[in-house]
Image (cartoon, rainbow, N blue to C red; front, top):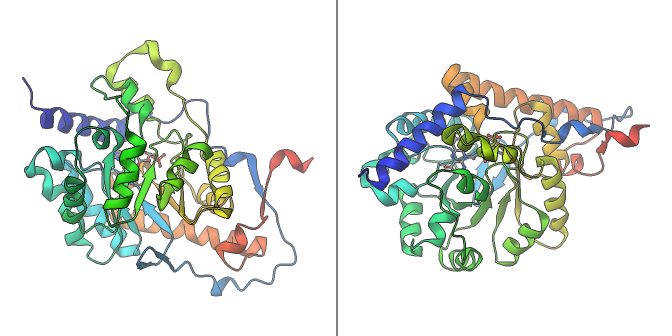
Length: 348
Ligand SMILES: Cc1cc2nc3c(=O)[nH]c(=O)nc-3n(C[C@H](O)[C@H](O)[C@H](O)COP(=O)(O)O)c2cc1C
């Protein structure tokens, strides 16, 4: 009988392999950014040289409001990937999330694949990661504290992935008690808790429940980028469920919906899900994100081209952002979020 940690290890390897070699993006549905256009402002007086992106993320200063989304940990390959991602994140002084720390709970031999990040990047904000399925099982708050300590995490991420678990051959879909467990975690962890999806989006209704329970950050991880239904359908070869490949709420929709809650709640909104280009990132900010994030495009660029190219790509994206800010008359991101983007349909 294979051990639980061997099964998890094999699955993690397959996820990385599929994300690097197969078409795992949404088929028809897009992230929605294409429906938006910036309002050109011909009277701009912005001094583009004065635009900077320095900001704070909880207690730390960062150079760009950007997160390399939670991806790996818990396999032999993961240690190498995480070490390289840590070099990129520390080179840019941005936020880095580790992949699910489930395996660290299952076996000590995987601890180094996570710890390497803090060793390589002592100064950046690092996010721990645990799945909803682990949270509702018998994982104690003390165990989660130990996962956070392992990487000296600045915040703990809980990922919600019901579609993925539903379609995963070995998936776990008993989520009863999840909301209570999130509330308990928020109360007892003594670190900010961020909740994210993995590519099907967080609705306004779900966000209200999370924010009411004291969650400090929401990463919408909307539809239109990597389809985790797709990844699991490729693993299981179960064609009966292919109808669910494109399941989820487009990223642009989620950002707008959740951003509207800023009037009532104080939280960090992370916009992600299929942000694969400068213009998609720029629109994610204009629609209301405080931080933007990407996953698969970073992994692909890292593996196919290397660390320097990932650093260059992210810097290039922020250069485009500053040009858009110049052209829309926005001296900072707060101004870019104020009525600088509109739906294309209203052009006519
Ligand atoms: C190889 C890979 C592994 C991932 N593993 C995790 C994980 O362990 N925990 C998690 O919260 N999200 C995980 N994700 C999901 C991403 O963090 C992200 O939310 C999702 O892929 C959507 O972003 P994208 O369209 O930019 O890829 C993973 C993504 C990739 C590409």
